[in-house]
Amino acid sequence: MEAFQWQQARSPAEAAALVTQTTAEAMLTLQDTPIAQQAILVKAGGVDMLDLMKEGLVNPLRLVDVSWLAELQGISRGSDGSLRIGALTTLAQIAADPGLRQSHAALAQAAAMSASPQIRNRATLGGNLLQRPRCWYLRSAAHHCLRKGGGHCFA
Image 1 (cartoon, rainbow, N blue to C red):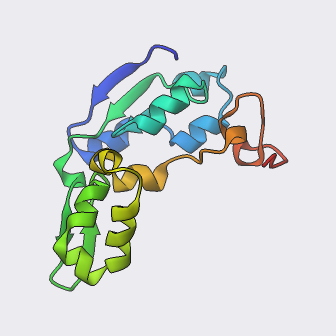
Image 2 (cartoon, helix red, strand yellow):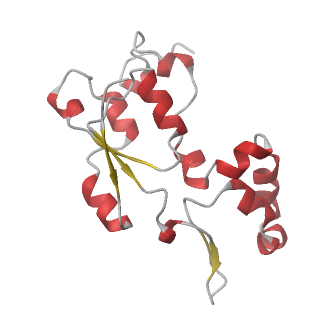
């Protein structure tokens, strides 16, 4: 894993202004190009990001931490009946929310049955939705697969 800088965002707007690529874009960029060497990526929990960095699939110059942004946490309901679940809301929070268990039972049940209790207490909705596939070929630097811009899916 390469050295990188760390920056904590003070707001979602600041994080959006700082980040230069998505993780998927960074995985498609050849690591020895100037664009890849200047990549600034967002991280919240960071488990998947650290795996990608250890495997040499992304080597960002800087990670922007959004894990403490209150605006991205929690479950709220609008007066019109709409539902908002923040990206940093944990799977355990989704599973335990009484309102969700009644109005969106499938979502609450799926969150409750995901992984182990320890992981549900740390795993976020945003992280699960944005996690890169665990495909061995995608995560292998030796394979230029379809998802990384190649012409073939080895799986």
